[in-house]
Length: 133
Image (cartoon, rainbow, N blue to C red; front, side, top):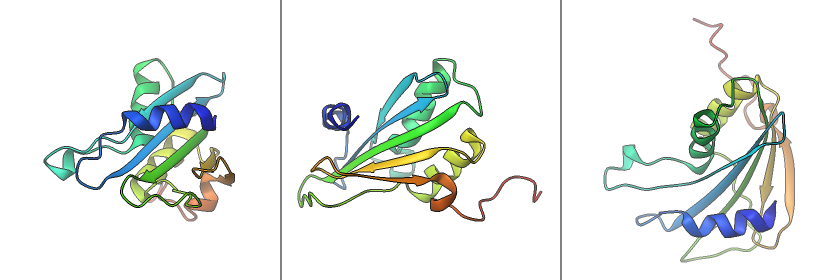
């Protein structure tokens, strides 16, 4: 997966932050969907790689509960740290919780190809579930 992420990250559009992220999500049938972060002139219109990959998956027929894995590689183009692991942001974590029914595995990669594995609930304990409403 790391090699695929390395190729994909070149498509990220980070004209302001210079911080590029690539994500590949895998559904229960082992289909892969990719996304990169895209920054626009209006920052609130920007989208993270993970949510971009989720949108790609839904566009291609994935259903809620089908999300099994999220793979993420991030890098700063101006100050690259080969040892850095980049976890999903809070908004992406919430999206992953909801789309995976609290069961997704998250794989983070650094530029050396090393990886760390987490459950989404490790990264977002006490997640908002909607039952609170």
